[in-house]
Image (tube, rainbow, N blue to C red; front, side, top):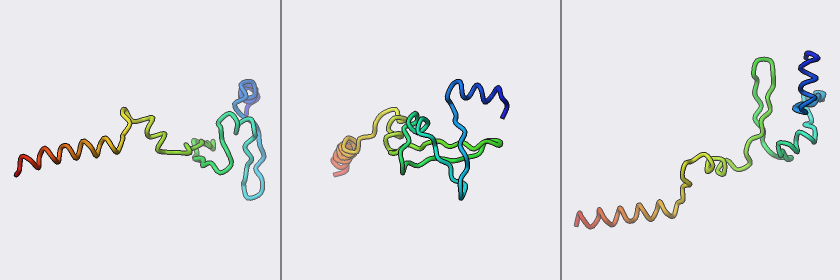
Length: 95
């Protein structure tokens, strides 16, 4: 790592140097865990970009994440009511 890159990363506190332990384990320092709100037992995604290893926290509740990305929240009760009304309307027309 170049001295300039190291200086920039330390200046903005975006990274910390850690040592790889037995069985290739690493300990994520407390200041980083706190910043990304990572707790013991949480899942992370580990992937490679070029020659870098990226560790990205995964959301604890994927349904909450999906709920935030959908334009309108899906509510099962409302969907069931709409389906029931449609069924009643179309059933009356048939008989």
